[in-house]
Length: 158
Image (cartoon, rainbow, N blue to C red; front, side, top):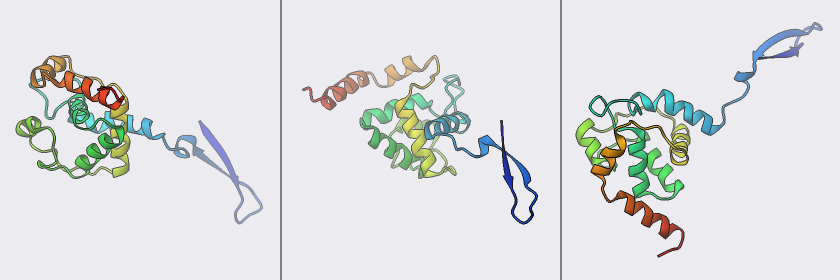
C-alpha cells in the first residue's frame, strides 16, 4: 500500500512522491518484540532444536528460571534486560546452561528492544521443544511447588 504525498517546495508545480506506508509507522512494541524474538533470539535459543543439538537453552527454560527468581513483570523484565545487555557468569541464574554452553556472548542489542522482548516473553506462552517438559521437571522437581507458593504469596494468601 502506498501513500501519495504532494509537495511543491521551490516550484509552482506539485511534485509527486510515493512513500511506503509501512515506513511511516513503527511496529507496536510487542509486535516488534515478537519479531526480534523470532529473528534474533531463536537463532540460538531455538524452540525446535533437539535436546542434544542445541547451542543454548530454549527460551522457555530461560522464562521459567527467571520467573522462579522474579515473580513480578517489572523485576523479570529488568533482570532479563540487564543480563542480555551485559551478560556475565556472575549475573547468570542458569548455572547449568553456563556450564554446558558458556556465558551468552555479548550482542549488539538496544536496551529498549531487550525490554520489549523480555516483556513479550513474560506475557506470552512460548513454543518449546517436545523434550522440554520432561527435562525441566527432572532438573527442577520442586519448581512447580515454588511457583504455586509464589502465586499464593502474591495474592495475599498464606
